Length: 100
Image (tube, rainbow, N blue to C red; front, side, top):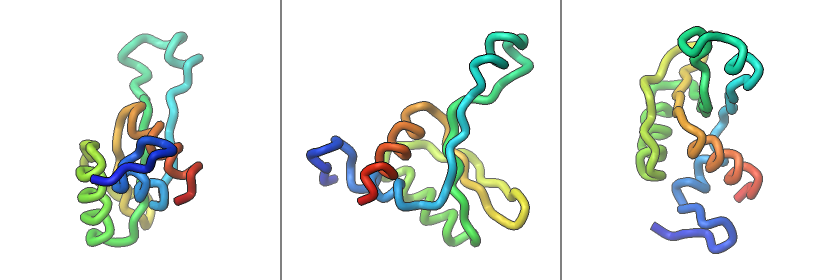
């Protein structure tokens, strides 16, 4: 898989930056203040799609980029494809910043 020399990201990872989505970060204050099992939110990217075909494309791209997609779900009128972990958040934000 080709790599971008400036960032070290693969082509599949760079394509992730063009997908519509948003990042969820944990709240350090809540994590420190609440019991460990009460606040479970972690690092997450949620990719948005309008159809199951788009979700399938997103899942294929995530696997090609080396990430493990979780189970998609509906939120409002959109399908959401979550991916958990700090690595995917870093990759997504870096790819968006590069704007390739």
